[in-house]
Structure formats: structure tokens, C-alpha cells
Length: 376
Image 1 (spheres, rainbow, N blue to C red):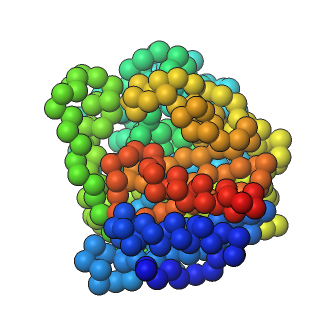
Image 2: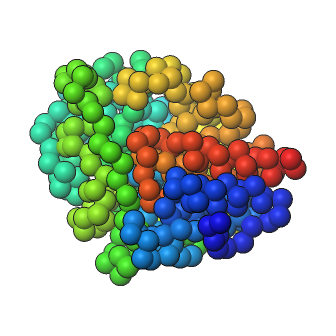
Image 3: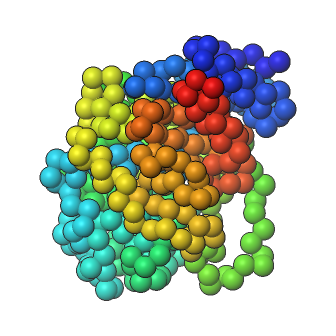
């Protein structure tokens, strides 16, 4: 039986067992799980190996690249600025970023960027992977680009571009890079070990992700939105092993943390803007999360999905309560928050599956946590 470290309230023993079983079965190599209720941790556990060879145990302070789970940090930052009256989700992006009005985008609103409906799910100009470390190039190209579909009419998952789009709006308003805003305004006050733009001093703590098999896109339309989104530049999970990736600020994809640090931050959402005595958003400010931005077949993901203001909302495909929201990352990490039960559940791992926004491993953890909070 896999050895699980950390603390787990007896009501949530099913969470510990779910992680242990996954490690035993080889579904996971190394992983961490956190469950918070009313902003306080009731589960903070980890186990397995920090490397594929099994030579390093996953430790309490092990961190890894969580891919699109990082996006939830940009959503929270935008909610904070909106709550302060510095950002209007219904205003044109060009109000804050004048160059963005080019190529017919003068009416594209901030909410379109938040809900993946802006029509900018990828770059039209050729991009090399290393270009993702060039903030000015990434944002300038998006500002100049014509949308790939009529903004506001449908979602098309902005897998990598969303972080630059939201991040540049944040930079224009605050004068800070997203990584700096995250560190000083969010992670710092909450005492959370989560970073976008990792310093060399933390490299030794990183568990390098174990990439999944590359998908076969040979039968897909090379001019379709899906292919254009993921092949320019080509997204290869092994990029997370490079130093340039760790040092860059890629706010949709390269956040480094573990389940505890992600849950520490996102428990603010479950607490309607507050956790452990730190309030980042007013209760009223949190209402924006549940403003539906899209509900239907996503042009990139190819599945029906419902987006609120950034966060995913409950749907037939994702049965959540009316006051719950979530998002997940390429390979399997996931974070779920429910304001009704004040529950936050997070799963972060190093062995990646092929899913883009989470997988069955995380769902199993979430179900076990819900059973615990409901007293099942």
C-alpha cells in the first residue's frame, strides 16, 4: 500500500484511500491533494515519487507545473481589480490596452477574454516555443491579430493566449507583471507557495512533469481552430522541463505549486472572497464568477462546456452545484470550489494524462471529498 504523508481528518479518509489506490495502481507516480473547508485545511497529503525513476520521494514542499490550473490565478486577479473598480468586465479590452483595438477588435470586451469567446485562441503569425518567454512579442501579435470567429458568439479554449490577454490587461492597469501581482497581492498575503515565473532557487524542489503520449492530429483539419490553437507554437509537455519555461511568465500554463498552495489561494473563492482572515474580493465582487459567458460546444476542446467569468461552471458534463466553479490543467490537475459547502478540493500530480482540463483521477478525489463534507 502506497505510503501517504501529511494530515487527513478522519471524515476524509476516502480521499487518502483514493490517492493511495491511484499510486498503487500506477495511475499516479507522485501527487498531492488538499481539501479545505471554511478556508481551513482538512486534508493536506502527498505521496509517491517526484521523478519517474522513483529515486526522489514527493516531499511536503515539492512543486510542479500545473498547466492550465494556473488560469484560476488570473481569474482571481481580474476579480480583485474589478472589485476595486479598476476593471470593468463589460468594457472593451481597448479601454485598458489601446493597441488591442486593431483588426476590428475595438468592441471585444474583457468578459470575452475571460470566457474564451474573444476569437484569439492561438497566434496567426508563426511562433517558436521559446517565443512564449517573450511577453512583448506574444501580446503585440495578439493585439494586432484579427479574431478567428465573431467574438462573443462561441467559446474556443484560449489554451495559452488567455494568460497573455488577461495578464496584459492587468499590467496596463497596475503597472505590474502578472507574476509580480500574483506574488505581492495574492500569494504573499495568503502565505501560498505558488509562482508564475520560478526563480532558480526553487528548481531543486520541482518535480518535472511526466509527459503523456503526443496526440495524433493527422486526421484533423490543418486549418481548423483546434490545430491552429495547439500547433503554433507546438505545445509539448516536455517544454516544462526547460529553464526558459520555468523562468518565463506564461499565466495560462506555467504556474508552479502543489495542491496545498493552489487550494490555499482558491479557497478564497469558496469563502466568497475571504479565507483565513484575508479578504481579497467582496462577496458582491464574487458574483461575477457566475455570469455565464458561454454554454455549448467549444470550438477548440470539441466538447460542450459552460464558462462563467473565467472559471468553468456546472453543466450536464460537469455536475456541480449552482455556487460552484472549477478548472483543470493539461495532464490532470484540477481545482474545485463550492460556495454553498465552502469546500475547496485540489489535486496536483506529475504523471500527465492526455486530457486538457483534468481527468478521472481528479474527479475521484473530488467525489471522495464531497462525500466527506456531506458526512457520507
